[in-house]
Length: 617
Image 1: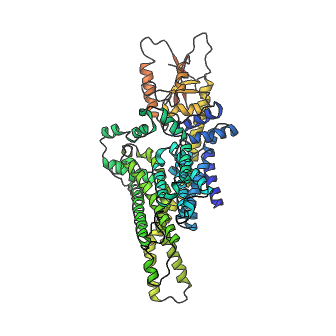
Image 2 (image 1 turned 90 degrees about the vertical axis):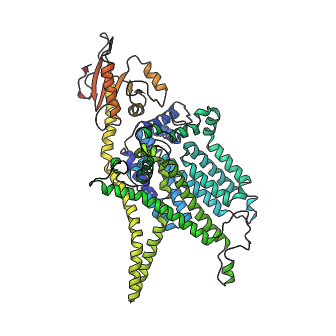
Image 3 (image 1 turned 90 degrees about the horizontal axis):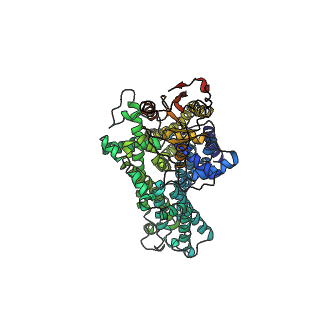
């Protein structure tokens, strides 16, 4: 297990060292948080511009910035502890619910992943690596506390200090997770329901108090903000506005409930749980119909989403049926000696009765599986009714990242059937003279278990191939990173250190230059845009001659906005009546840069940047 964990972290280390994935302004925003925490004494409660997301990644990266210096690599290095936490807590949860061999297989599966899964784990935009860690961790600790609680003893009156401490750590984990993002909410509700169901008496004592205290400490920044902020600006109001975001676009584009359901189950869910390659949105019903070139991809992607839902429903039915067979809910207020015990009929029939504790352990494991499935179901339902499921499922699939945590519950029945088939094959081969009836039984068994085995192999192959495709994308990511550094170098060469640009350019210019270049956001008509860190706008406004940087080349993120900005600048600024300012025009690696010309008495800026001579606009 340790070797597999080391291998998984090494794969991710090589990716972020490359660097992969391509960075953007949201990630740069987290880098700026870390930069300000490390060197300016800033202590933001939230990710700049988002009053609901705790910047824990930024605080972890700030410590690394002090040790190794600020860089994109160091920022992403802070994510590896969360990835390790996800792998370890997932392994522990699966081992608690099932067995060691299956837990090891799941750990090996999660070592790999599609580009989308690795992207969510290795880009420091907040919340996603942490959610992947806290979701299984919270359920693991809650299930262990439930399994180790003995309601018939005096433990509920005076729990051991070790259990009290574990409740406290669980509370801190819940509080931190809620501060980071309310996406963890369904898993927190499931964990608390497990504790209330199986440890109810214990929660009335100091164990419950330590849990509550830990939650308050972990969520202290969130509580402080919401107690001091206006009601219209508290985190819940912001979350509700985000949940309803896109409603106007939904109506303007005449998107229906079918678009929302298709976006949730056939686009977002497959991408969030490891399916690749991506299929074009225009080929997926009801946005469009697949062509002869895309029908195979569309069928596989839609089949992946449908299979996830079907397997989840089958797993839930299996758990409910098994609970009915066990017929023992070990609620703390029920006596162990109840005459309604389902094993009474076994004793009267002369059969060996399993211990009450064994039945209780099985009940807790089944309820934990149901709690995990219910958490994912609630998350998926909330996403499916939101407008973004139809408006932008190709980018908001990240909200379903925790659906990956339930994958072992879905694969367990397939694993069981495959292992049973393997054991049967080995047993058959040991027979020296198999009978014709045995051969027929062997063939029938193989036919029934073959789909389960093939499905398991398909999932494993998809994850491994996805990792290979990710490493194949490294050269393109390296070229993009070098282009960004070249632009920063060229801007510094011409002295353009105070600039205006669009959102997806500004923040990474500031972060990768370590604030040597300050950028303020403008919209398509050059009005003040959304600056996540408001002081940057004031710095650029007060600069004597800020430059304008517009992305215009194909392939650049939000080049459409850059072209509109450049067109508006050319038609409304350069040729406006009474315009006295003239500009030098530079073309740097796909960007148009307009720099105000100095007065005749001032020295002209260098003109050899990027090997291009500036023209006068």
